[in-house]
Image (tube, rainbow, N blue to C red; front, side):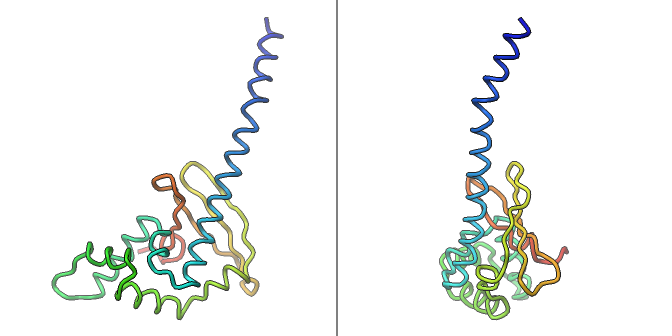
Length: 159
């Protein structure tokens, strides 16, 4: 009986282990593709695509920070989010200013990418710029079945 149970267990593992390894490889590929997509969109100036690549928390943080900076009595966070989703004037001004201080080619062409942790709906990529003394960690989150980049979660200082 023990021998049959052992054989059954080995058979089960042989069937399912390759599937879980394959699924993890697919997730890692999807994580890397999503992160690369963000930086390519930045390089191309595709503002709606940049916005679509960001996690909900990053989007909320950016919208909230802009609303706070506008310091006018009324600020519509929904209007700001819509502007960013469509790549309109406020979005263009924001990303143009952002990209004056950050060159996405630095990440795409001059950095080493290493897949970090991948557990559940969270992942990380270690980015090491060729001139950096220490690497940066890019955090990603699975939202609605897609991997989204946590730009603010990765690089904004904690408030």
